Length: 291
Image 1: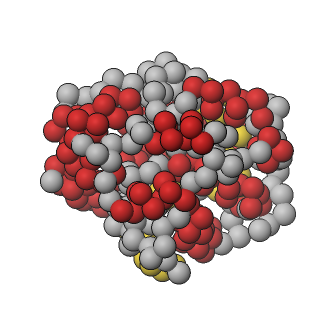
Image 2: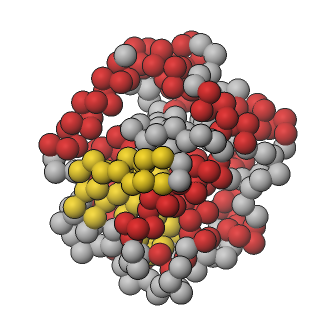
């Protein structure tokens, strides 16, 4: 129950900081998201998290970004956090429900879109479909590179769906340096990954579904790729795929001290990278046609 308690306390801390919990009704049920009013002149920034985690994990990052951004939005993916579990949970339906929740919040405005891991794949898809609503694109160890069937099967084996011991190993991979309390939260992490929802999501992933070089090279908005040197979750060759095929001039950051989820390792340092990118690249970026 430690994971659940940490989530509850994290949400309470965010709400006490003036970051509102809000809900959006979608065809897949209600989606929860955090809405943080900012104090800066930079455009809104939207945060998408990875599989089996929640928007609460962005807590310290959200608080840090409020200083320079006008608004910070962080969504619980359907079936994660406080968002309802959809009747049909596939990668496509999760993305579609997130889109239904996000578009009304942006209206005709554009935002910097940030995605980590599976959230990175959602961010890529959003930017491909809604370039006029994307002021800048920030990808942190994103999913979406090609894998053979055997590579995908081996990749899915690291997800701790079978035992707390497997969860301990997964947490070791997840962080740059795993914190002392990881053995305490390992049983909760195992329970999260053992849910039928996660099995459904993983079964919907197919080896032939990936972003093509043409798609990745088509972005006209500023793009930043962050791939921590301590990332031990994603296959190493995936970083090379994105670096080769993102548009020329994309910002590439490969920091020491960052694991798969740098918002857990060093949220303040990550916030500085995001802010510098937004200020230097995204603030005055030319927007495409509205979508």
